[in-house]
Amino acid sequence: MNPEYTATALAHPNIAFIKYWGNRNDALRLALNDSLSMNLAALHTRTTVRFLLDGSQASDTLVLNGRAIQGDALVRVSGFLNLVRQRAGVDWPAHIISDNNFPTGAGIASSAAAFAALALAASAALGLHLTEKELSILARRGSGSACRSIPAGFVAWHAGVEDGDSYAETIAPPSHWNLVDCVAVIQSAHKPVGSTAGHTLAGTSLLQAARVADAPRRAALCRQAILDRDFEALAVVTELDSNLMHAVMQTSTPPLLYWEPQSVEIMKSVMRWRQEGLPVCYTLDAGPNVHVLTLSDSVDEVEQRLRAVDGVAEVLVSAPGGAARLEPSPKDLEMKGFNQ
Ligand code: DP6
Image 1 (cartoon, helix red, strand yellow):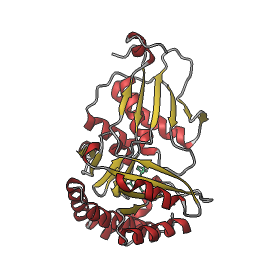
Image 2 (tube, helix red, strand yellow):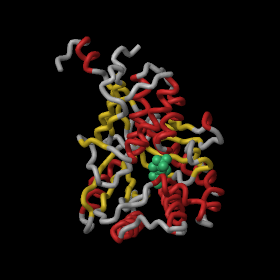
Image 3 (cartoon, protein in one colour):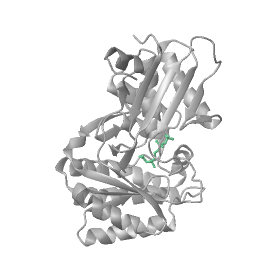
């Protein structure tokens, strides 16, 4: 039971080695292909949801990084909360407070961590006891990639064909491999087209069918590379998969070009550094930032090289992260004898 109808959850964003781009069903966010990712330990979203039964507010309210949010973002969050409310058989409005520990506006895709934390906090606040699979399915309805931020470590999203079989699960725990993601944050003047709009354009590229048709082969190679801790094999398939997704984006109607000159400079440098023997590879999501993967022994070297590139605002370094999790409420802490 949750007498206060409130809960707080924390979730990490994730970086995909095999990407999700395009749905068979946009409303349900049923992906066209399986994807594979790693949670990012150093980055997180912490979200508190409180359902209000006292009539103090008529509709949902959202405070994100200390700022009251309205418009499309609130509509998306409310629509998602309706799914949770339906499940619990209630119609109470909620107050949501959400904070990211990474810089806002840095272009780090935060919808994965945001909807994973929201799914967990909202369902716990209403006393729903969902399994990890059920939570992953629920989070997916808020943002496709959010289903991968529910389980721990290295994660596979089984695309499935219907709501109940499209979910993510751990293929290896965070301790399995000392892989590290160094995100080179690129300053950008452009506001990119978001992923949700991007997914609907994927089918307009004549390359999308080829990308999707070969996805099972790439996913199998990537999974094996992770299980074998084979960096070179992971590097080759991860760069190929990122390039294929960006080829689809760039050949959609209208075309989406997320790369900035600095993104390309880093991709070329990473290819050269790997030829010289440094364990590095790149992957980019729907933005100009370059995720540079390496092994823990080489992090200092990679970070230093990335910081030396003109236009790199900062480098965010993350080891493999854990699962989305509930945080103890102030009341729990009080009962355990902690002073607030
Ligand atoms: C490029 O999960 O952000 O990061 O379901 O519309 O929220 P929505 O899309 P989203 O798409 C992620 C796209 C990507 C690749 C990936 O993470 O797999």
